[in-house]
Image 1: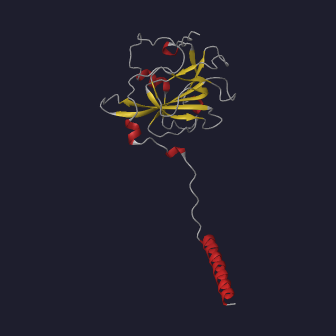
Image 2 (image 1 turned 135 degrees about the horizontal axis):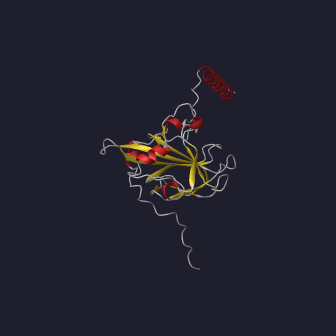
Image 3 (image 1 turned 90 degrees about the vertical axis):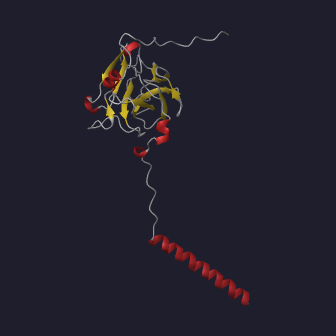
Length: 230
């Protein structure tokens, strides 16, 4: 009988303890975790130090000097934050054409941030300041609406190396390459249109200022790998 009384007391104690904990939980609520905000993702000082030094930049598609392409929607036209590069045939004639790294860099993003972006690549580069060559700053080149991505995150890529192909974001647009130049270490897919330029700068002007070579020094034309013998 005494054992039964002790067991009942223990049961009531546990019951009251559970109710008390539940009441405290209702009164004192823990703050909900903040949603992930990619705007605050940035390269660390160590990651910046690992970025390759890029002293020359070229057009990301077409032949020498971006031949056989045209800029269908330049930077800041209609609030646009990049350049829309198209093949001269228009429509989807450039679908699947090669996209090249504009400069020596490291892949810091490779994925599909949103349906409107389609597949996207972001390369980061350390670029010498034009006024003080001893100092460098971080520049990102962005390649969006890709059909295929040919490189992986953290991979080093050389200027002119094929990194993907021109796409249309799964049919949302006519095929073209959305190409951006961004300043700073923040790795954020962000938006392609805005009332202000944000951290974007004109790709056309940047490439002209950072080509690092005379106009008559041309890259070799893009070539396809020679198939191996059976």
